[in-house]
Length: 389
Image (cartoon, rainbow, N blue to C red; front, side, top):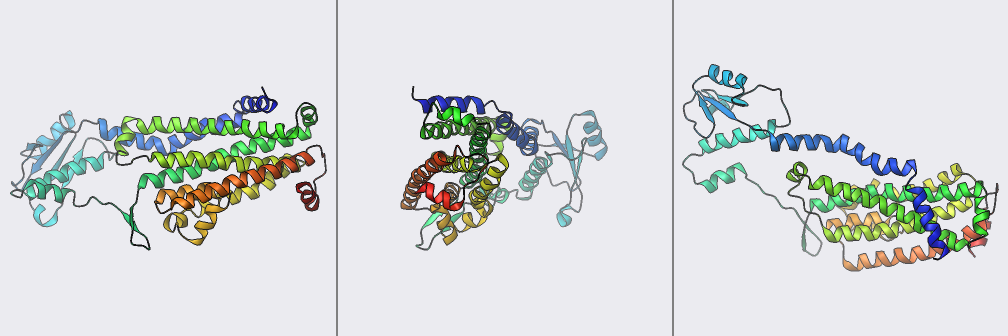
């Protein structure tokens, strides 16, 4: 077994058990589920599982249907209190001119209110359009089923896909979180080993290139593990009955997921190698964090201007961000989700990103080698240029 594989296995085993990793990996999805997902689950569950029985009191004498018809409000109220019905509504005599109805329930307003109103609306429309054909009645109930298309400069149209936009935004968020978490572990590890002088012991057994390679791939496996856990949790939640009911109109784009995974791996290699170089140059963890913050802000720029990228994917800013190594992963996934990206643009972006990785790795190795054993002294810009040469 080569030495860099041993280092990679150690880095993976050590970092997956760190409190920070466990908190971000499991704590963040749980927090998001409690804040965002739990209300959705409760709403969907209440809509899907509640047994709704509706009655009505018709003071016009013109309505009939599947609901229970009561001659007066007193009897309807009695059945409501006794639990024989869950709701009843009153159609006043002047309904034709006012359109107002009164809805009664034994419980206060809940998430199922919209579903109840939908049932009553369907009942009223069936009666108001009595005599018309069923096709017309259904069209009045659902007058619009919209599909959005974007027309480019050549007159070609592409169908807008909400699922693609959701995936791109989710990818951008989790990409930033996972990449920066994993690369930050690498940064902290290198700085701590320099401060504790563990680096001297390691370099007595392995070369600087093997050490850097093992750390990059070990932390890369940590990042992929984190993403795999998030994807598994996401699929489990989205496949559950209540959520699937609400999201049944959203389809997941497999090609987009494949591109997202590829850009994740390439993006990680870019940031990991940069963080390794910063860790070798920095004299303390705090100093390393400050320097890394510059690259973190640059990498987060596509998410900050995501509205511009999604609305104008062919703009100059979008094109520049698509080819710049630190911003291309997030930007390209956003642009691909809009359907307005040509194949050669994706190929060019991947080629530039791959070449950039090779260049950054070589530069990081040189800086890594020259700066590892420097304690208490931060190299100057001129010294860094000398190391690179």
